[in-house]
Image (cartoon, rainbow, N blue to C red; front, side, top):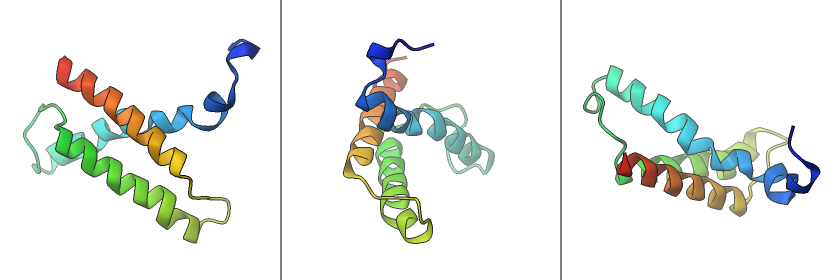
Length: 95
């Protein structure tokens, strides 16, 4: 259970967005490995991270609001995707 003092604006609105790339990119790259589009067991490169950040940002914040009534485009979501991507990229490159 999270204490009430930690339940701020960031946790309610953007924390899950920071997890998009760290959670989804490994699965997507695993699929790329299965289709032999990339080397097996290679770490994500910065170009892959940036490409997927850009594609998912456009898909979620530009395209999705045109197809889903409850979806809204938010530039801060894109910033949260980028923050999560940078942190994950640093960890992936460091390990």
